[in-house]
Length: 232
Image (cartoon, rainbow, N blue to C red; front, side, top):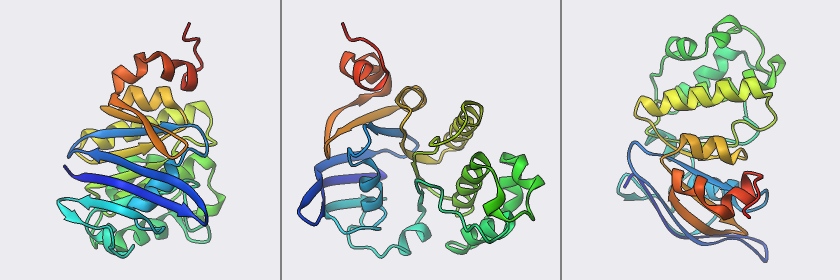
């Protein structure tokens, strides 16, 4: 198992935000984590990346990384594209990509331009002046500069127009087809489950359902709560 999370707990002051969850992702899988706003999805990803304190066990590539320092994980191939993109707005597109390559060395900007032709056109443009969709492309491309083995994507479609959402999901599909393992947190539950191999449903800091993505798509509770359909 490439990622194996056991009994993960996260507390914010007196609030138990993540309540002892188990989650795993096999090599080559695309696994999605869906749920309502405030369910603990982003907190879970941040804990896996060691951006916030947590308890429990996080095993990556067979090694316990529960106490790893944040900067060590990208060097091992575990990389996250954060909610809100987190680009460097004052740097150019190309400079942002070079910052992505810094963690592991290497990485090809040309390879990213082949995946994202629009970024090639804007390579000398200041990133803060890009559209929201272009910034999301840049955030993903910057992460891919590390040549990740496990890519964590947090809400990649948030705030984007439908046409751009479709393009971003096409890119995610392409990345997965290359063999990159992906853990995807996504507000659009239908798109996420249609793309994923397996899924987890998170409610109030706990995993309430887990299974094959197709089975979750057909689950009446999921259809009613997250797909806007009447279970009856």
